Length: 222
Image 1 (cartoon, rainbow, N blue to C red):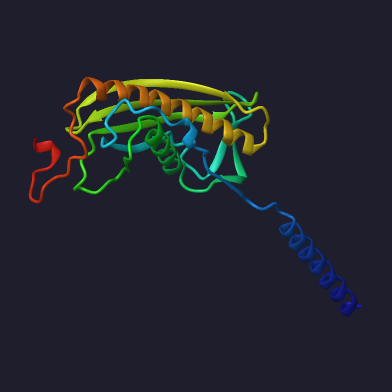
Image 2 (cartoon, rainbow, N blue to C red; image 1 turned 90 degrees about the vertical axis):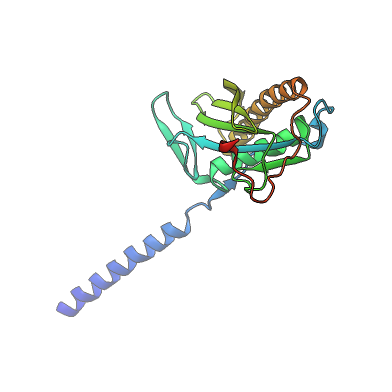
């Protein structure tokens, strides 16, 4: 009798283990995303020196966004994290790279460096961005809210603005959401490029690609 009970218990435990393994095997694979950037057809006509050196970053995010999972909202107060839909890299890096690629076409300039850049490189202008909202609401509308600055080579603030940009995803699918997010980044890039072009036109004496000489003091001492 005891043997039959033990055998029945062992079979039951084996069944539970098999069910658990079957459940694990049925989990969907994780999908990874990046922001689509502008293409060569979006390149602007040169209005600033192409040898202009532009630094992009740092890009900072609100803590609720600084995670690998893509964030959406099921209501104004409730966040939803994409367990199986995630960024392919830290989102601040993805945003910075998308902005850099876009600005190289929109300013345009061939000299764009990402933060942190080498100490021997002093950009003519630096763009910093602080993202306070970057998600999709229950209606599928993506919202990008960001405060941004443009600094000169001496780290003096030339422009500081707040942008709030929206785009309709047209679907609750994550790929559609990320594509709409990319459109808001494109719009922010255009705002940045317009400000940079205006500044560059007003300052034709801007130093192009200035490189610090060996032994030269850092920017804060100039």
